[in-house]
Length: 177
Image 1: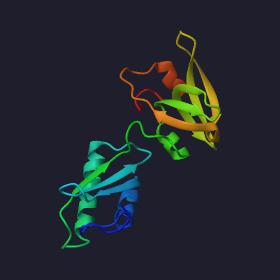
Image 2: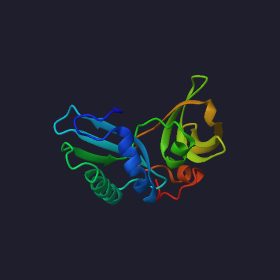
Image 3: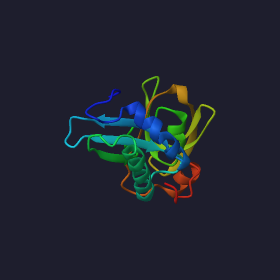
């Protein structure tokens, strides 16, 4: 929604108002969703950064965003403000998304239609390193792939800890992932 609706600020107004505060905290606003149809209306600010959003960061960003938005218009409609991170299974579409997902397990669809699953390593200069399992045993290799050769990339949810060798090859000690 881009226009002002039911006394709510527009998406553009929210971004302009909050962008500097989020940037000072080390985060970028990825999206702003305004749902005036819910009761009460909801403003959702999706933020991401090189350091993942934790509950403390979300609480602090929510407080500062609320104070800034409340200062815009005393006559505005009451709303629910939500500050959140992108979903775990959101597609990776830019080099910074790949960089921020380093150490995570991903499923890639290459432009030739083939599928690859592995752990993201370093991303640099339009290339990503992917740690892939070779065979049934825990043998891993690193493949370098051009980002423009990836048609789709989605982070996978993991329920068990990754193999330490896999993390090492991805450039992670195990504490970051």
